[in-house]
Image (tube, rainbow, N blue to C red; front, side):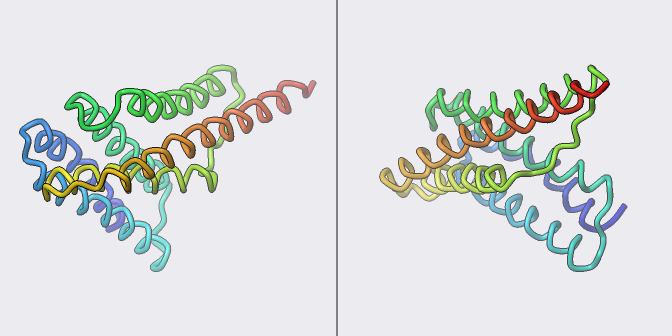
Length: 181
């Protein structure tokens, strides 16, 4: 178990604590813990690459930690009414579609090795930034409506583009391998 993997596991363990803080209306605590989780995401990646500590486990754990954090935070903020439900549905549906596509390709005996696309990386950054701004505005009691609106629009657009890109990649993969004799 490498140090980056331990950091990633720590991020996964922070998820229920951040959710609990949001549900308990401890928004400043939720904001700080979310920042810690976000920073840990950068730190584990930096350490893994810089010190050649990348592992197969880390390649699975890191995106899992990201998705667990984003989906949980968006669902909780949506339940609380702090972000629009349509955005929650869009963000969560994207991840369900990606996981479903991967599982379907495996079940069909045509496994797809998913690799993060640039639009997906930008989408993740936008989703984290939006959640951070929402939690920060709630935790610090500081309104930034225009900035939140712009980030929300960016999340929506990048999420839709990411869905389209992954869908195109999945269809291309399934067609290319299914056409072989």
